[in-house]
Image (cartoon, rainbow, N blue to C red; front, side):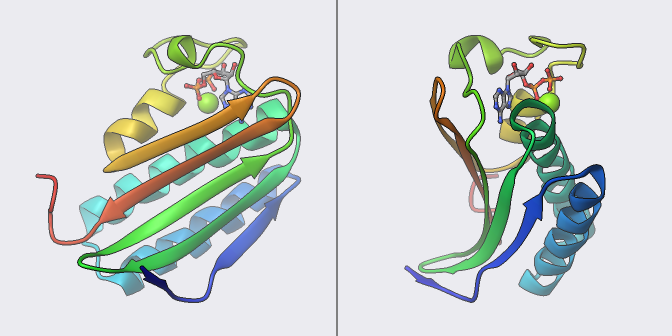
Length: 138
Ligand SMILES: Nc1ncnc2c1ncn2[C@@H]1O[C@H](COP(=O)(O)OP(=O)(O)O)[C@@H](O)[C@H]1O
Ligand SMILES: [Mg+2]
């Protein structure tokens, strides 16, 4: 699968979440997504960037267009924070270890077409989400 140049934002402050949202919005529009999908992608990006900032303190978000049999947008959220203790629990709507709504991870999964999570206690978390153009999964 061929990829275009990767874009990224290092997340170390609240403001970086705004920058990530902006960059990802532009990439999604450029990729050809309609307004509804752009909003879905930006909402998922917002939740996942916020998780990086809240739970790991810092990390990085990268995104790139996927060119294969289908065109899509892939976002990666990488941190070296504490990791997610119980991933099955964390994926349940309403579960929060803090004072959140517990809708970030399950919401992002619902809004995107694919979600992969790799996490290990003490080492960190990588969340990869993808959205495909042309309603392949609808
Ligand atoms: N990047 C991360 N690093 C460590 N823990 C995380 C991370 N992202 C999510 N979590 C854990 O998963 C839980 C559920 O996340 P989420 O669904 O976004 O809900 P909320 O952020 O409202 O608690 C969080 O409360 C937290 O314990
Ligand atoms: Mg959250």
